[in-house]
Image (cartoon, rainbow, N blue to C red; front, top):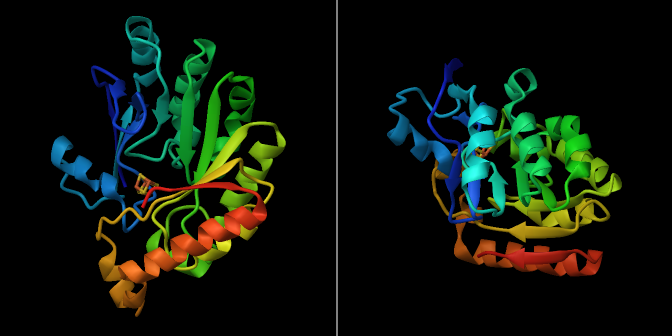
Length: 247
Ligand code: SF4
């Protein structure tokens, strides 16, 4: 893993998903096989494989403190092209500092991660007036998770994080994206842990080779995804969880 400390010129960027996005890191230690964020390599000149480099924006909080005064208030997504709670965050605490600034200034925030390190910052999340905390859970089957996301935390740990955040009164959601084999069983596991669920197929094809290698090609078809998304929506309804299908 090549870790480089950098000092970019800005941190609060406009986004197509929410009004703004804050990415305290370039690159992601989780290195998921399907990750769409690998396009960042083109913009940053990295030649290393995705998942083997991280640039740490050590001045992220300093920049945010300045930019938040100049820009119109809007919803901030933390983060879009990295996991804000990847392991390096335990050392650098950049996500924590940025969240504290956003919450102090009462800006709406949507946090999205695969890591239970988010629990470290529950004190900040609890204090927020307008914040949602989401864990991405792609399958209920941890053997499948290991094939596609071997360096990301186990599914059970993510479910525990959601449960704890929800118990502390923080608005929580599960992002089922991409919808991997075994995702159909997630609504049952999410019962009582989330306020809502978002399902997105995220049809990027970077991980098609993993499906082929493990004989899972049948689960790449449109028919399979339609069936799985329908099953998730029905199971969410049964579990009393609001569900939004993006695909
Ligand atoms: S956690 Fe998210 S940003 Fe990181 S590699 Fe996986 S999909 Fe990409």
